[in-house]
Image (cartoon, rainbow, N blue to C red; front, side, top):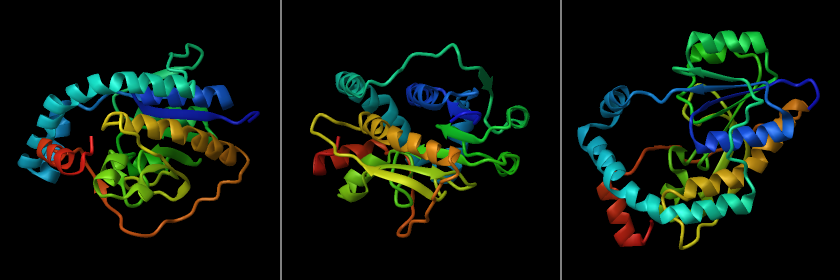
Length: 256
């Protein structure tokens, strides 16, 4: 939209690059802020405090043992999926990039105040602090890999399949508030998983399915036509599976 300013704040990774390029191609992006990955020590300390040593140990084992095997199986499927969707994964040199330690740094507030965006889109960041949100005067939109409020957190499609809940296997575009994926919903879309899919292909399928709805939400925001709505039902935050959870569900239900 003409004269509308768009700011992108994200964690580094493939999905962020794809979303940034999609936004740039449709609307232009005035700047992108990429935060560094949180240190493993800080992440584990916080996660252990929340979930306990046993569950975190199981999650680490899953990442070290299972994920590398799934990655080899998923590589061809992911490439095919991205090629079919014609997404752009290249780095665009025309977009001003700012790298920060955290999206919640004071420097980010200063950048927002300087740019004065009409809309902020985020992806894969830490939970935005109340201080940062209070400094933002425009809508903030996120695309979440899960159907909220039932599948907040991470790997919403995987957990929906584990729960035999295909009617809630999908992606949500929502406004951002101080909670974990608790903002009002703008759009939701379901995905269908195939036999060749696994734990690592589900998020890519959600990404591809969600981008058109994210772009629609941006268009709505720039046209002052955002129509958020609240959803009801069970609300739960999900985390990475442990190695024993994954193996049990793969043997019992065939969920890869």
